[in-house]
Image 1 (tube, rainbow, N blue to C red):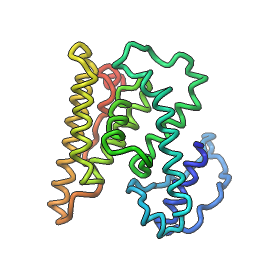
Image 2 (cartoon, rainbow, N blue to C red):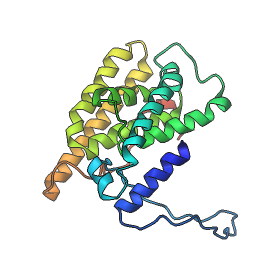
Image 3 (cartoon, helix red, strand yellow):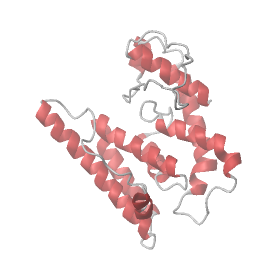
Image 4 (spheres, rainbow, N blue to C red):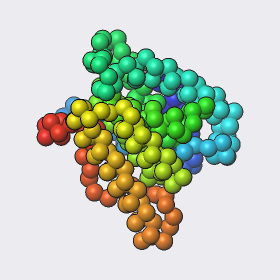
Length: 233
């Protein structure tokens, strides 16, 4: 599934950016240091819609991919998401090696949002899922979930209120006053989502455009990290 999803997104990006067929992987000679030089590929974050899929010739695959995306995201959230939240009494993942392939797939799915939106999952449910994952025991998954929420704020004006409302609902309902580090991180995330929204609105005003476009000028720390992790970085 990981390979299939990655391949679908790469092909869709290449067609949408009119790059032609994606090239086959090339073998590059290693540098004197032993490292291999790779060309960084920039992928789109704009939501793939039915119309876009039809225009790039992928309409026969798009509905099926979104449905499978929804099924797998729900299954992974049930078995590797909800049971391993820092708001609960369960500790970290019991067998990291056994769980690694599933967690890798989980990260890929979360990172694909909002490029792909799971078919059958409403806005509120999707925002709630991403909000919960910002307190997951897996640090990388926490960061990816927050990044997806921020991308929705930056690139999709009609999602902004839903994202902020849903995230704050999660904070009020699921994080109690005794969980001070989680509450502190959650408030920082709310602040950063608001800052991203404000930055886009101000940028749109200066450019004479609407509310879409790229996000945030300066460098921001990852608000899903605790104070100790930030200091360690």
